[in-house]
Amino acid sequence: MKTALVTGGSRGIGRAICQELHKMGYRVLINYVSNDAAAQECLQSIEGDGELLKFDVSQPEAVQEAIGQWQQAHPEDYIEVLVNNAGIRKDSLLIWMEPEDWRKVLDTNLNAWYYTTRAVLQPMLLHKYGRVINVASLSGIKGLPGQTNYSAAKGGMIAATKALSQEVARKNVTVNAVAPGFIKTDMVEGLDEAALKKDIPAARFGEPKEVAAVVGFLASEAASYVTGEVISINGGLYT
Ligand code: NAP
Image 1 (tube, rainbow, N blue to C red):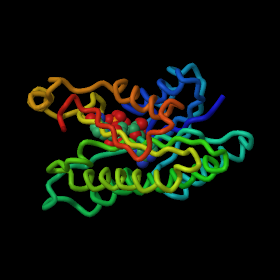
Image 2: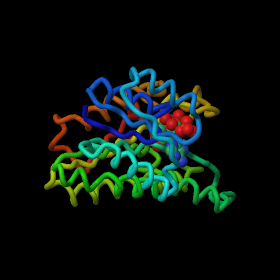
Image 3: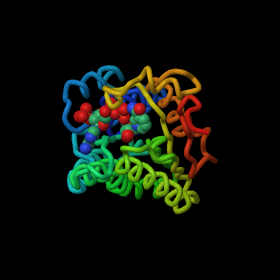
């Protein structure tokens, strides 16, 4: 079985992506940081065809150690698909934003992209096949007030997607991003859905599986000539 790694795979959008990649025949490495019960649930939902990899994506040594140990234990295998999905938000107006909230959001959403992508890229290049899919956000395209930290991180991820795609295209490694709008997960808990959906042409929040379907396409061989792209999944909210 081929292997895919989904960071923040245990809940929300990441879980739906794990399920989609499992349907496509991948053995899925499910990364998460703290919620063991949710991670177990996710593993069960893919019939145990995977492995839990608990590490904090914002810690470079932890990322290197976890991925390095997995690779050592599976010398014949490599991570063919990487989905950089782990993310957090800590919203406030810039004027009130504490340095810690700026740093934490940049570390988890953007610096983590560098740590994980760099850790899996070389085997993809050696095997001349790979897929890197980055879960960005509408916030990284449009910028949303109250989210300067998150918009900066996701915007940075989009720029990095475009740059890396050009570095590795010759080796059949594609690098793309998806930019979800409002998707029903724990992350949007507390938002005023009734008010927000008035601005969404589709008049509803999206479902995690609607993001996972696009990620599945980008992970497939059918998407081999798509690279450096950002696909919005937002019910028409941003055009
Ligand atoms: P979620 O339901 O809050 O799930 C977050 C996942 O990330 C969990 O599996 C969590 O693990 C993991 N995680 C958080 N910090 C981590 C860390 N430091 N190291 C490793 N794993 C970590 O979030 P979601 O809504 O599914 O969001 C997934 C991605 O989509 C994020 O990048 C988010 O920015 C992006 N996005 C979401 C929306 C939306 O409306 N929901 C819109 C646009 C973009 P634990 O369970 O262990 O905490």
